[in-house]
Image 1 (cartoon, rainbow, N blue to C red):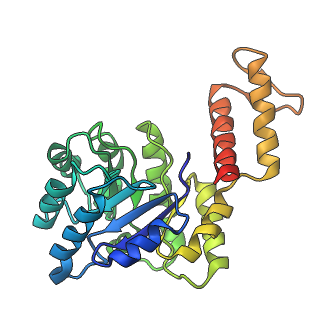
Image 2: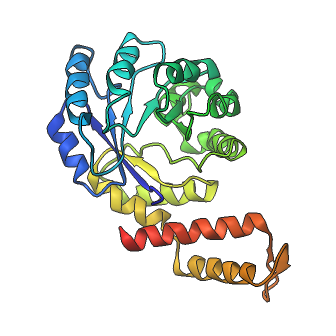
Length: 272
């Protein structure tokens, strides 16, 4: 199933994590970083380890701390072998060496670096290809805004496009969008998702369950998009190589792959 929604939950609040697991999100991200106060980090790790000691009903990612933090080494060593863990999300990655360090500590565990500084954006492709354990990259927009000293969201469109291109060049899935901080303004969330989708993002992280359905609706293919994708797939099944559809659209292998992804997302929405 193609994931569209990822819901954050603080690791030191197990009851909130339990609600997140039942929220309808495609994946849950247990946060051991920003959402947890320094004096609660040990408890958050203990609670997370207890939860992940058994299998979970949906993928559970854990956002650890900075690659250079002692808390990160503790978390990676404590959680890597647990059956309930699906992946680590690694914040504040600036160099390929940051992610290689985590990969050595967690062999076989998928890693998702978060790019949150100008330096990280400059190194986007090398981070995306740093290790086979990297299964995806994404932005941390709040920290990136602070690093760049910008307030207008449009100022982040170039970094957004940069990581979409880096992910594609590295053969990774399209990145999910960063969180939308206003949990009340769902219209603005939808508009932001539509803009992100136009830039090449797929899905989004959320900080509240009420955001999930909006994100899913924004990234779900329209009926017209589904019909166009079906037309491409039908044409590709009856011909080989590049071809032109009756309406003049040119179809090649990349267009066919995009059509298949559209139909995969549509099917995911139909069965969720």
